[in-house]
Length: 636
Image 1: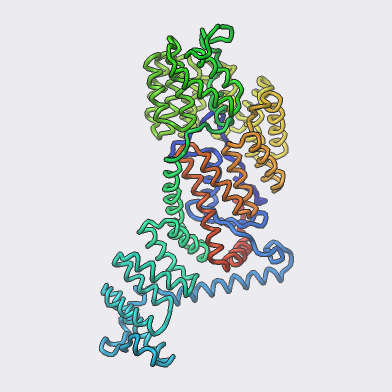
Image 2: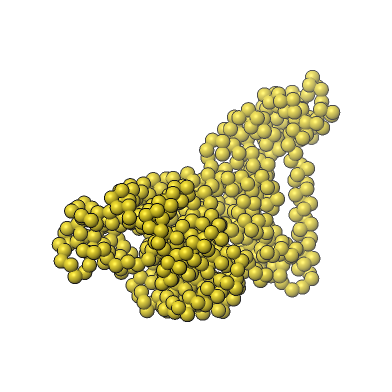
């Protein structure tokens, strides 16, 4: 949660290794979880950060805009400024009330019209040839009578007659309400093209006509012009000050729909390639390190162009923990199975090829490889564990549980099984069961650091802060040279807003990464330090530099890209933020992750379009954000 000073919230704790792997319906990579949690927990709150007002609407969409000039900011001293803001708020309310009264729906007006309507035989007769001879006053009078008659016909569901009457009213007077009312008739008849035509005419006459925007948005959505529908609903939300829950929910629905459409297209054309070395390393190190299988050791003579030779080549390449090394390993494992003659190592070869196919996002082929591996060698329990993680990513936790049960039947003493089954409990928020499995993993092998780290994180999630801190202090004593201990302990401190201590731990982790893995360092401590500086001091400059450094080391790191997007967003650098959100979508591995990334990209793009199309909104929104600040809104 955020602190009272208005800083962004501390991150949701991320887990070492590949988990928590998000079941697509409910989870994504840790950064997107942070943003969505933040949005949902602060729904409807308006707050100003570093000159940018963020409005979190219903459902979690983040709207943002530059605040008004600092000289009129609500936080500035002086009572004159406060009085000015109060007057602006009063005028805004009066204007909204007048707008509502003037733009009633025909259905509402029909009740009034039925009592005071002009009899049908007394209605004025006008057409294009006669309207030109009418005086201004006559036109105004005729338009009012024709509109009232149109409202009555609409109320009686005589839509064709209502359309005719509104059309005649329009001949007398170009009024946005007449166009919108006629659009309501076409809407009732599901004539979406006519709805779009008439609402567009209404909006051209009054580009802040909220009801016309909502009606056109609905018509656009009916004909699958979803990006245009999203633009209209977003404009409507901003103009209406985010007071309309239905419009806000429509924005959420359209964001998801547009993102899903684009996400499917991206996934269909996406090259199957390995994610960032940070991601790959975190996945691989979630399994206990084991020596090379017998017969593949360095001192055994093997022809490199044999299946076994390629298998050993792949294992050695993995040890570099670099992007190049992992790419070489993936290629070697493919080649090993092509060459064959692997003997007792065939199941292991399928395991390794399946692992890298999974990391590339090729779940179907990866599952086939793991199926083959367990068929050839059921005692290779790691294949069951990896297949379980694939089932989780394909939203099939029941199959994952079955794999863990089968693995335990093969070897109930394998600590890896308990560690990864604990991760399944963790993502299902079954923290008590997760803690038991982490402890069982430790009891079977106390040398594996990530069981200890994850137990500490789980205790923290359960609210046992003292136990969690004690677990991490033991970790720092017993695993003093492991950088991950300091990184994850730093996350706990950051969540408690102990910024100085957190940054010290991140610095320690960074230095250890540099010295122990100069070519393949984990960039997460750099990113966490960036977040800490931002939350503590609103230090955007140093936070950006740290993210840039992380991206130089690991250009494919999705968390670094997404964090940079958030930092730019907070500063109102919307165009640059959009580029990073789009990049995050490109780097995402699964459809769920792509859709989440694209949702933020689409929200960003849409609001840029709204500001371009409705330039007057920017200053009004700035005033609205400042007024909200003066009214006492803040971070919760």
